[in-house]
Image 1 (cartoon, rainbow, N blue to C red):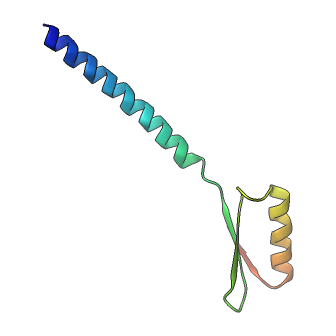
Image 2 (image 1 turned 135 degrees about the horizontal axis):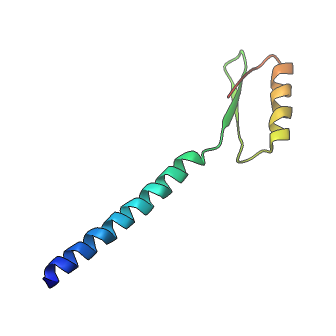
Image 3 (image 1 turned 45 degrees about the vertical axis):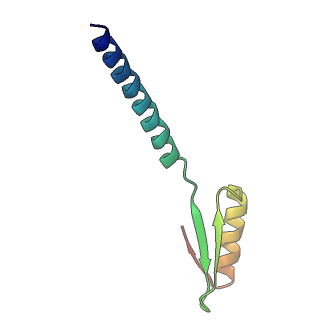
Length: 74
């Protein structure tokens, strides 16, 4: 009887731990930031991340890329 209570308690605890792990895993996957790349005809590339630049700065870099005959990709 006591053994069954302990086993049930452990199973319920493990289910909760697994559920919390799944929630944190889902959050980790959805919090990814975009990467932007400007590629030039000579093969050189410059990458920008939303982690490092604001939206306004990304727009400025996109404009500069296109003005210098680069190809912008998201």
